[in-house]
Image 1 (cartoon, helix red, strand yellow):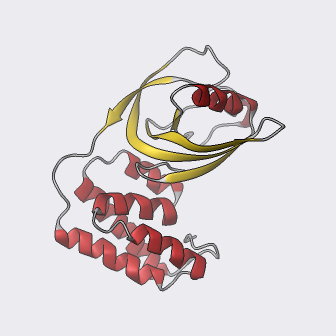
Image 2: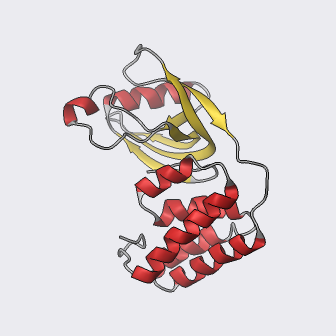
Length: 199
């Protein structure tokens, strides 16, 4: 579960502490941050404050539905990359932190790198089922922005660990090249899941 800038992420919220978070966000600016828990935590640690990855996505709740039992169905739209500067002392049931919003470096992606990424996606689309190919086609519509295309393709096709690494990469050229490499590996293995995400 990785929220890149410009991406949309559906969320089903059922844990009480996160229901409290959503309620407070909806009553305010609707902004939420979605960090990834570092691997290796225990169930007991999960109920507390296990370590989280330093880089994360920040988004705005653009759609919300509250069920009678208190659960929420949300769509969160990514607006920025961020790094955790410091975590606040616990005052609420959920965790809060001060974030540093991150910007991509200003230099553009080369046409060769952009074309390599686009070509890899075209080839991958031929290996996917109909649903996966349609999803990839929607992502490919972002071809005029290679860095954004790389982010969205990663969110659709790559494992969470790879997406987390890409969250902290602020050089668009390097990000596009890395996504292309990983997608080329998927293409070579030709191992895809029925829903369209490679295994």
